[in-house]
Length: 248
Ligand SMILES: [Zn+2]
Image (cartoon, rainbow, N blue to C red; front, side, top):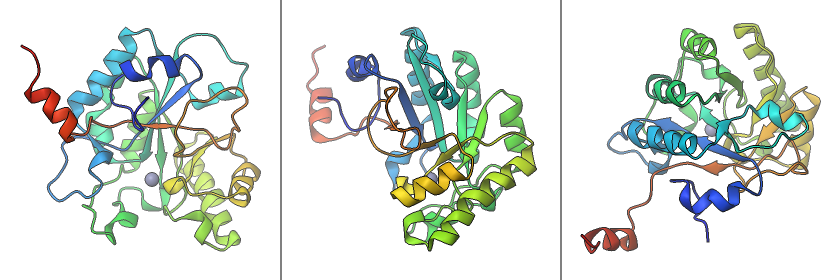
């Protein structure tokens, strides 16, 4: 049985042979005191270790655009980051360069250079989002950006017209600001309906990422790509026990 999130390659190696894995990261760096969704933080060292492990096992990075071409053989993995956190810009670029992986950041352009305001109502710790010049640096390093909507709402809870605005205006805004085609969308919270997926396709995107668990086959719908959330191993009692009573 594979766990519901990705921490190290070993339990996933068999699964990764059956399809293309897309890893989903959020925040890279030390977790601040009081963080509620602790699993969305991954320390810089563990992130580096995860990439080195994939690299050593012969995996190379693929762009989401790779799903639009006839599948090429080889061990491929897609690295994605949600929300556009500044801590990714500060803590992830070095490890990505070292292991030669290219990644995509799903940006919330309505909040560029601001904070994760959508999380604050639930008492989450504020985190700065990448600003204009940081996104430019990110692109200059050879990475990509995609849209994560204008303001990170639950798209299915909005009137369809407003959802459409979130989807289309964010694409145009990112293209105007950074001069690159925006071809990939990521549903905030993974929240979607057939109508929302259709809006994304009609807006001119080529793929969209969900938070559904699994790897992707050539027949996986391009607007419902599956991902594996990458995080640290949880320190539950079983893990703790095996750590305490481990054999020397
Ligand atoms: Zn998000």
